[in-house]
Length: 175
Image (cartoon, rainbow, N blue to C red; front, top):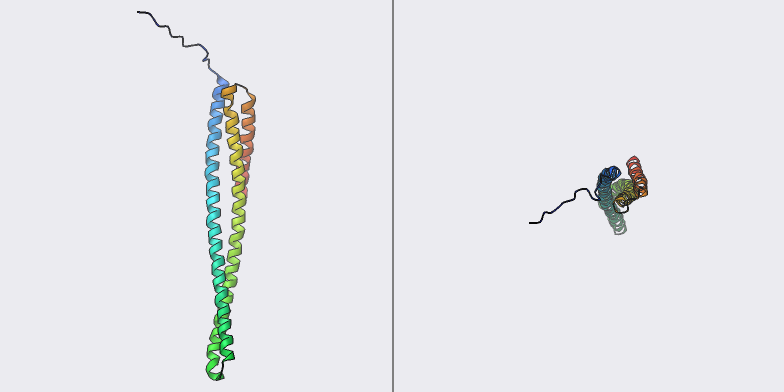
């Protein structure tokens, strides 16, 4: 039987820089995963807050319509009034309800505007996280190109892009 020789050392020398790049790619991947989760949560929070604001605006509109209906009711009773003594309590109730609905609608207006401001804040934060995610992905890809091209400038560019991405992620936390 012929003997088979196995040469274990051809072309597979240990690349210490490649190991460092591999660890770097893993670290960038971890930061990218955390940033992606943060971006998704920011978008979800924006949608939820937007829905709450829309609900407040709808409730505000309903209160405004109720106030208007109370005004119309009081006006109709005043116009068709044949007995002022009998109509006065009804008109007073209509006017009191109208004032109550006006007051409630004003409070809802303030709440809806506060929620709109929160939506704007969350949308801005989500945008920064999206930009961060893009730079981190770019850094991951550029760093990984070292394994195909064996050119050291790819990890340098990758680290630069990843540093920008990480900085943008930190910036979004300060907003």
